[in-house]
Image (tube, rainbow, N blue to C red; front, side):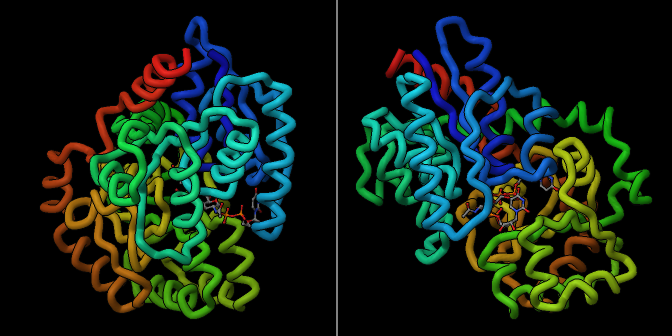
Length: 367
Ligand code: UD1
Ligand code: UDP
């Protein structure tokens, strides 16, 4: 069996890394990794390939950044050629990005079976690009790997054939478990930014619905101005661009207890996240990772496709500055109590064997 694994962005590389390494070391399994090039900056792509020990990538579509439909069209065209050259038996994609959708369409166009890792997530905001991508990819795919029972039920409600849905867990659990020890050993990030363990807030916000909307981005900046704890914020390039465009960067830079950084390596980020007091984020992956290193998070969105964490590891707070800073105060006041409770909670995203189950299932179906 020869598997094509298609990815193009930071979270896809992270979440497919263990599956790729398993496939690469399994006798009788051929592997072709195809990078769409949606993320191309060293600190969003290459650095993760190196740190997570991924094998050599033979095909890179090098699409770059552009308007969504143009990007999709170019990725699909490039992927069709790459997939044909690779003579693969099936295509595996992950998540909900433009690269995920392009991989699924290209596979379908070539009549190859398509497997979707992290299928069935729904936030029920129909206009969100990621929601559109998820629904389309689940529909197109021949095999849908649901990370949780809720995701499996979502696909059942959408009328998808139950025979193509496999409940396996989320691959992020094994990625974090494999990387956390190395992060603790290697990373000097706390010393570098003069942060004290368990005393600072880690922030990430990059989602289109947050940062491309001037008022929402303004609200987030206001929220950070109201927070009194030390904060660190690795800024995604999309966010940096919008901060400049909406003339908000100077306000962010003026917050004396906030450190801004470039996007961090996975080991530095894991070290920062697992040593933080709490996390403010709109990231999908971080909503899952926090259940492994057991940190409370504040989701600065109006909805989440990860309802498994709501009421335990996280709260969905939206973008109201007062509500965000109030939630920070609440978590800060009850830090010991809350983290003690989280420490004893298992991750709702599985036992760290999702990648193994995915490979076994693919071998059973297509081997
Ligand atoms: C994409 C995903 C989003 C995911 C995120 C992970 C879609 C629709 N969105 O958003 O779901 O959460 O990746 O990080 O697929 N840029 C760079 N260097 C790069 C890539 C992008 O500087 O390597 C800049 C470009 O100016 C670009 C902007 O970031 O216009 C946005 O990049 P894009 O890939 O379109 O979307 P993300 O915001 O990264
Ligand atoms: N991450 C990282 N460095 C950073 C910010 C995030 O390594 O500076 C990792 C984080 O640990 C998680 C993933 O990137 O595994 C999340 O990606 P992102 O937030 O870009 O995308 P999303 O998950 O929202 O699609």
